[in-house]
Image (cartoon, rainbow over all chains, first blue to last red; front, side):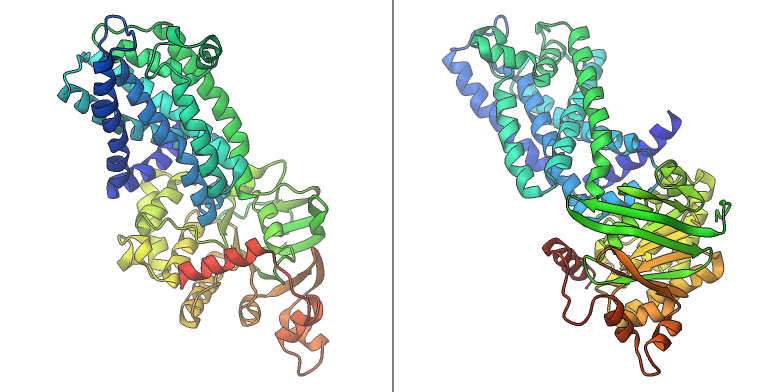
Length: 256
Length: 271
């Protein structure tokens, strides 16, 4: 365990140094969620076409937009991995005695920290727009834990795709193909109970749904988790462990 | 440096073979490389050099056969093999977005160097490679020769018994190439490292190698000392003649699109 932490921390440190040195990615990735909240959220709130219980529509979609931001940011992690492969960085890492799980886990944790930066942006925008947020330290801590876990899931999923497709061009196509359906087949911008039956089934096996469900209860005053936090976090943890075990097996194939 | 390995050879292969579908990239390779030797591996593009290095560095599993590196089986004990080797890829593996020092610190952590030793080892490696003054500059501002020396510093940081260098001077100008050679010879002199180097450069092969092998279509055509191989073809024979004789003749052209593209990309990044 000590070795896993040391090796993963080395990977995370490098990713964070690069992020701090060139924060343009964080800034550019903040634009889209802000637009969703400020434009889409406000307009749909006026229409009042979607029943969201006690919550205003803007409050309802705020966790959804945070989860979307996490998804969109993490799902393109695979591009960076393919780029590292083309540069020979992956080969260098794989020839080191560092365990494969450390290399993959380190990437997932680094994605988690990027997700936390996205969460900070969404919190600030939501506060400006008078969304009633829960600001108790424990709730915020749990949100950050959920964001870390969600980022880890989607970054690891992205890494698996990268290991399979191996080229940036193919990845771009598949990345686009996956993100929007995952977003719309979730409870991000409408509740599960207004979905048609088939879409509700898809949403129930979509890990994004569980992240949003947890965030809705933890972020928003008066919000609640439909499935319960234990179910939400258990599902996410199980998915993460399953994806991690697949990624650990596939990651070395990038250097073949 | 760790040389506590079984047997007398740093690298020992037996019938080592790798197939990709119908293509046999490495075909029954038999190699014996003693400790402390600089061993050159020559061959045209697609001859199987990189495949062989990838198998020996545990990046690629063999289809059949076996190999021991540093006394450990590459299939049964890949972790032990990795502890005993350093590797400089044909590609440019130093991270341009980090400084030279940060690149080395990453390697030090991944190789498990104890924290109290890290700074001293990094400083020593930077000094050895002539990069002490530029350690805190971003690597993307380095020249091609400096990048290659940094990669050598990363590969030697943990004092491996065996260094694998896959075309380390590709894309470098003659001055930078000479500097890399000097450092390589110093590594062997000061640390007794065994070096397996692949190259297309006949001057490099002759200058550095105690012994070399020429690969052709996945098989070893010949193994010997450079001078003996030249003498075997006549008094006037050059290393180019040796290469042409054993690597498939003048008109043989090989190398896939991706190999050519990779070489050009590496040369472009270092140039």
